[in-house]
Length: 396
Length: 137
Ligand code: B12
Image 1 (cartoon, helix red, strand yellow):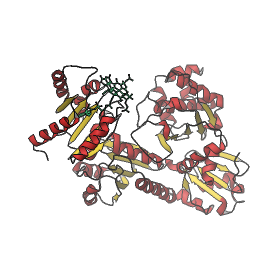
Image 2 (cartoon, helix red, strand yellow; image 1 turned 180 degrees about the horizontal axis):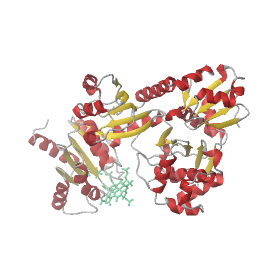
Image 3 (cartoon, each protein chain N blue to C red; image 1 turned 135 degrees about the vertical axis):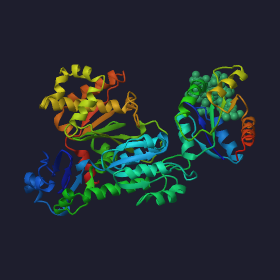
Image 4 (cartoon, rainbow over the protein chains, first blue to last red; image 1 turned 90 degrees about the vertical axis):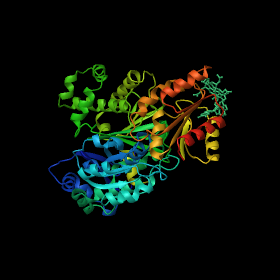
C-alpha cells in the first residue's frame, strides 16, 4: 500500500478515471456526455474540495495522446530509431513510410499531430526530394519535424513551411541519438494536453503541472523493485480501454539499437477492451490459436459478440494473449522481446480490477506452451492498487 | 570514399572485422562498421543512410553461402543503390572448395569482388584497382 501523504492523485484515461487519496483508490467510468471536470466533481467533488490545489496531482491519457506518422529512409535505422523515440515519448504511431515507396503510399485519413521526417547521417546529403514535398502537401497534419542529415536541413526548410529542424537521430556510428527529438515530442504532448479545453479546466482544481500518463508510468519503472518483489527482467502490460502499453527493460531486446534508457515503451493502438473492442475482436479472430484458447477457457467463440461481464473478462484475457503474441518471434514486428528470459509479467490498468491472478496465469501458461513451446512460466503480478501510477505521480 | 562493412549473419568472428576497419581507415576510407552479427538488410540500409559507395561484407564461419543467395532479391527492393560496389571475403564456403568455382558463384549472386580466403591487403588492392577502373574517386 502506498503512502501518498496528504496528496490527491487523479488519472484521467480514455475510458475511466481514478482518484487516489492516502486511504483509497476509486475508479469511475467516464460519462462522455459531460466535461471531464464536471464529471469528476459530480462523482467525487466532496473529496476533491478537501484538498488544497497544490496537493492535487493530475495526469491524463484522455483522447489517446498524440499521433505521429514517420517517414524514414530505412527500416533498420531511421524508421526504427524514430519509432523507438516516439513510443518512449508517449506518442502513438499511426503509420511508418519507407521514403523510397512514398509515391505508392496512401494518405492516412486521420489528422496527424506530428510528422517525423528522418534519414541520413550528417556526411550524407540529398536524401529527400519532390515526392516528399508532394506527399506532405496532401497531408492533414499539425506539426512537422525533420531529424535527418544536417546537410539536408536547408533544402527541407526551403520546401516545408514551419518545419522544426533538429539534429539527426542517426549518428556517424549509425547509433541512435535520442535527446532532441524526445524533448521535442514530449513538449508537444505536454502542450497538447494543456491545450485541450477539457483538460485546461482541470487547472481549476490543481496548481501542479498536468502530465501525460505514459510519462508518469515510465518514471515509476526504475522504482518498481523497491515496491514489489518483482524478479528482473520483467515486462509491464498496461491494458486500457483504448490502447495497450508495454514497458520492458532493455536487456530483453537483442538489437542494433544502443540507447541509454533502461526501459522502453511500445504501444499497440486499438487493442483495448472498451473503446477499441471491435478491433480487439477482429485481431482475435485473425489469430489461429485463439479458438484453441477459447476452448481451453471452456467458452465458445460466441462469447466474442456477447455483452456481459464474462465476455469482458474473456476479452481481457485475449488481449493479454494477443499482446504476448505480438511481442514474440511468432509475429514479426518492430521489436521482438526475449520472452523466455522474462521472470515476471506485471499488469496494471483497468484489467487488474476485472481479472484474478489465476485467470491471468492461465493465459500466460497457454502462451508459453503453445506459441513458444516452453514450460517457462513467469510469475504474474497485479498492480491492484495502482502503486505504479502513484509511484510515478509522486515522482519519488 | 565511404565503405560500409561488417560480418554477415550470426557470425561472431571479430578479428578480421577489426583489421578491416583499421586497414580501410589507414587507406583513407570513411568506414561505417556494423561489426559482427549483421543482417543483410542492415547492410543495405546502412548504405542508404550513409551514401556509401562500397559495401564490404565478411563471413568467416561458413554462413555466407546461405546469405549470398538472398542478395539479389533483397537488393532489388532498393531503389537507390544500383551503383553500389559489392565485395565479399573471408571463408565463403564450409570447408574448402574450388576457388574459381566459388568466385563465379558469388559473382552470380551479385558481388563485384569475391575474395575467398584472400589476404586482406591483396583484397583491398583489388578494390582500389576496381575503383580506378570504374573511375570512382
Ligand atoms: C578464433 C576462432 C573462433 C573464435 C572466435 C572469437 C571471436 N570472437 O572472434 C570462437 C571460438 C568463438 C569461434 C567460434 C566458431 N568457429 Co571459429 N575460428 C576461429 C579461428 C581459429 C581463427 C579466426 C581468426 O580470428 N583469425 C584471424 C583473422 C585475422 O583471420 P581471418 O578471420 O581468416 O580473416 C582474414 C581473411 O579471411 C581475410 N578476410 C576476412 N574477411 C574478409 C573480407 C574481405 C572483403 C577481404 C578482402 C578479406 C577478408 O582477412 C583477414 C586477414 O587476412 C578460425 C580458424 C583459422 N585459423 O582461421 C576458426 C574458424 C573460422 N571457425 C570455424 C567455425 C566452424 C566456428 C564455429 C561454427 C565452431 C562451432 N562449431 O561452434 C563457431 C561459430 C560461432 C559463430 N556464431 O560464428 C571454422 C569456419 C569453417 C568454415 N567456414 O568452413 C574455422 C575456419 C575453423 C575451421 N578450420 O574449421 N571461432
